[in-house]
Length: 102
Image (cartoon, rainbow, N blue to C red):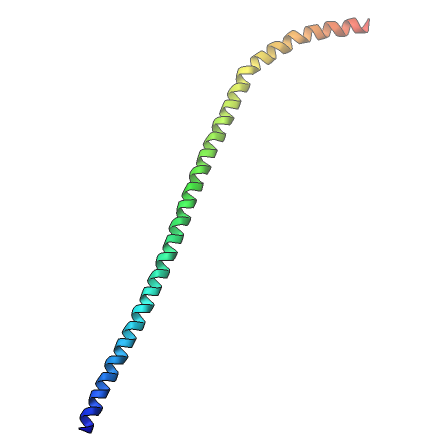
């Protein structure tokens, strides 16, 4: 009977060790999966922020380019007026300089 009891205790000890190892491994796997999900959410959020920032930069660049184009068009539109005004002022200024020198 002593041998049979020893064998039974050995089987019980092996089953208990296997159960404890399985529980520990399951807990470790669950903990690692939770950490992986947390890190995945972090990087997904970071990617979303980066995409939003890139979209904002693209919008700003487009607005800046449109503003520059509008500014060039404004200068090209007003330039003939400035030249004409300058031509009108020059003869008057020349006449005024001659009157001042006499």
